[in-house]
Figure 1 (spheres, rainbow, N blue to C red):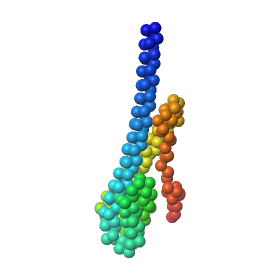
Figure 2 (figure 1 turned 180 degrees about the horizontal axis):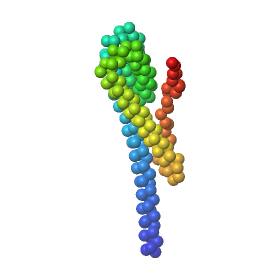
Figure 3 (figure 1 turned 45 degrees about the horizontal axis):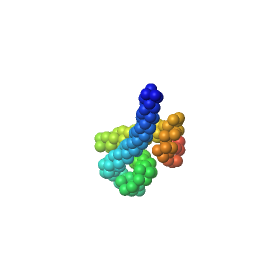
Figure 4 (figure 1 turned 45 degrees about the vertical axis):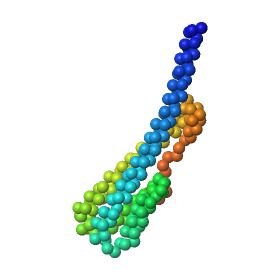
Length: 184
């Protein structure tokens, strides 16, 4: 009788530990997703903060390219004013597209290409783009871990119990999927 009682106590204790483990696992995975999404936002804002310096450097050389400057400025405002990460990411894609035009302008102004400030800002933006790409990859990796935990046995039972559902991966904007045209 005492052996049965101890076995029952140990079994209940193990079941409670399993419930606690899975509850904590979903909390950790959810926090990792929130953190990685926040890192994407930080990098998007950092890129937006560099844009005014880049524009000021370019303006002195490319006085006749006002349309592109307005495009970049509008995209930057959209990032800074976006109230959701989705809006900021969409604005970030627009800013990235507009910045490509700015760097294309630099091709027509050899003095600008050689300008130390311009080169430094271009390198900074390139580094930030790499960090954005890494942050997006980390976010999607975190989503993958979370989704695996919600679909694998026995996590699927605990996910249902705790009301956890699979989350969506970040999608690449359609315009970013186009293969770049290289012409000589």
